[in-house]
Image (cartoon, rainbow, N blue to C red):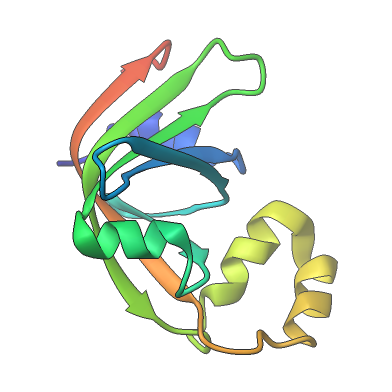
Amino acid sequence: MQFTEAQRAFLDQPLSAVVGTHRADGTTAQSVVWYVPDGDTIWFSTGPESAKVKQLRRDPRISFLVISPDGGTYLAIEGTATMTVDVDTPDRMSLYRRYRGEEAASAIAARPLPGPNARVRITPTRVYAYNIAG
């Protein structure tokens, strides 16, 4: 599934997203993440032993909601998650730059993570846009 240009422009903003995963009992767990759009996929980083990762290993279905600061616009994405464990990829710092700027990203880079992080990549299967033209 491909995002429209208007959807891409919305995703290009440094907004937070709400991620929904499924617990073993079938109930939904939600958390807030920073993300990076990457073509027609989206990725975010999390701890490799986090509840999100454990839940997605069991059931890769994921929901992802990005909402504007005023709540009047949103993009709801349903999809499938794939995970890799990586800490040294060149674009890892793009997440920090996107949300905190170059100076803060450089300071973070000087303090490496204690171990690898999990990168969760979402491949959309359904997208619903509200108040996004195009």
